[in-house]
Amino acid sequence: MANRPESLPMNTKTVSEAIDYRRSVRVYDPEKKLDTAVVKRCIAQASLAPNSSNMQLWEFYHVSSPELIAQLAPLCFNQNAARTAQQLVVFVVRKDLWRKRAKANLSYMDRVFGTNTPKKQQSSREKVARNYYGKLIPFTYSDFFGIWGWIKYLIVSIVGLFKPMYREVRSSDMRVVAHKTCGLAAQTFMLSMAAEGYDTCPMEGSDTKRVKKLLKIPSKAEINMIVSCGVRKPEGVYGERFRIPFEEVYHHIS
Image 1 (cartoon, rainbow, N blue to C red):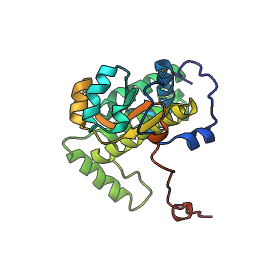
Image 2: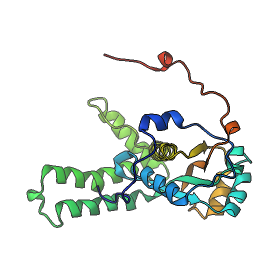
Image 3: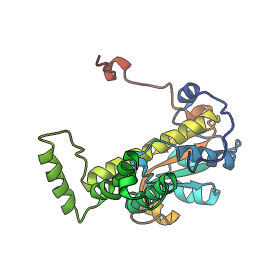
Image 4: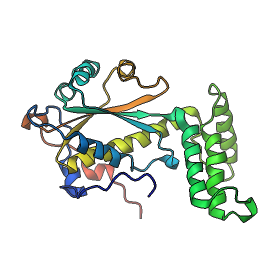
């Protein structure tokens, strides 16, 4: 697999065990420190998460400085999960980098299929891949003050009267897609941390404008969530896990 992180050791928990172990922990033990290299490895695993069109419109800001965490905690409204965190990981959406990411995928096509192959000699797989990143992705992601997005939406709505169509083509739609992708990476990270015996808490509550300024995150980027990290104290798990009865949310269509 291209760009795969360095070899990973056997996790201490199975996937099922990690899912069961993971809780949103809000109070961490100050005496139990995290291995920064292990957290970084879990972030590397997060970069292997599934994502829309392999565009990878994300960035990960790994904060391990106690001084910086102390500055970030008030920006997370002094939540216990932020105040007691040993480390923080800020998951950032970079929808604005779609051109760069599409170009990276096209460069990958050059490595896979070679360069300057005449179109008549290209395999159907190569043609589809190059058209996807060279034409379809620009059509889907490009916009001009929202105007082009509505024109695209009108086009696909009309065509969609006659055949199945991908309809999420407005800028607001693609923003949702990018955030879903980043959320998948965040979940992968939290499960990887759980497998290592570390704890996390995803936080949406923050002053994202001030966080971006403090961490020097580009203005066009958007914060998806901030995940605090540490090792739980018993009181850090607020009660037993509650879930709506599975029968209420599960629909089997046979």
